[in-house]
Length: 425
Image (cartoon, rainbow, N blue to C red; front, side):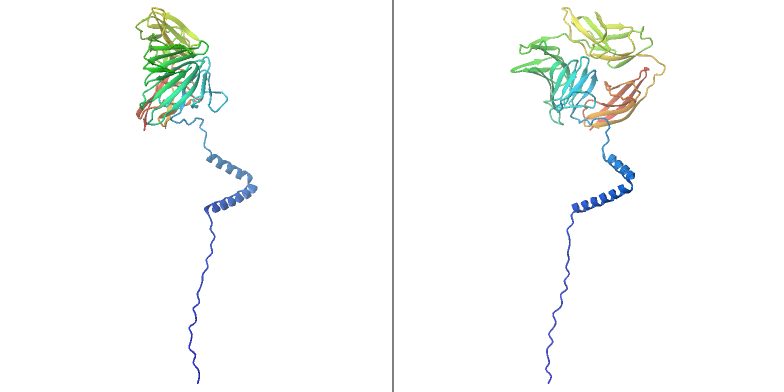
């Protein structure tokens, strides 16, 4: 009998799949890519050296920012808006002096020095301007101008004379100061004043022309009103007095061109407003802003003068009042005018390429004739290139719409005017 064996089911085979992987990071991919590119360019350079160099140069130029020749001015930085004669600047982080230009920005600690015939007008972002006269040394002492915060600007005068003027401040508590010796004068909004410090005579003087100011020296505090002056020797007592107001000039207007047929015989008429207590006036014209080269210097009892014999060119004029006791006022603001001989061709080139906003500063870019004179919103454009191209920054503007008026005059007597609307957001 055959023995039957029971079938035992076989165990199923289990199939196994093993998966292996290698982690590759983006960094590794980039490195390998750069390595392959490096090998490729190396081989290409050996085969085609000139073509490879040209391509590399073009790539480098395209990636390098272009130098426009004009500094990018931050809306909160101070800058020069008028330069005449020799003006030098020593930056706070430098040991050397360099000639001032309109592309410079001024920072806290910078030194500004004017020559005997130099004049430098500096504008701060809050609208305050400081004008350093000849032989003056000043330091930017404070420049804190932030949006929606009270501003604080100031300079220190070591020697010489500085005129300062404030505008309308948007934020209460803003201040503009000038320090000299151990005293600090602080102006209110919409005020004008002049300060002088003479280290040789050790005399200090501060005069308010409009608005008001306060003077602090140690524990002493004085309020100073319009046409009041404080004087004191270094370390001496402070004296406050009333001063004779200078005349307000009427004609010719500041930066006005005067066209005559015959400058040797055609008179130029000057006039100014009378001063109540004045008995006489001293009239002066000069070819320099510092009045170092006088063309006319005469006294008159009337409020006008006619002058003949002036050569064509640029001139400055000013007037000083004299009372019955012989006391003299400060000189008036000096006005500039240009005397031009009438010509047949009176048209001139004036094109405005663009108006660019940098914060609340507006830069006007355009082109005019070489040698022409330009005025933008009452300010003379000094940085006109040899080919007539120009760039000019206007003082800080308030929010809203503004009209910019650009007027020009060429050497033939031709004039042109352009008007541009800008909006400060």
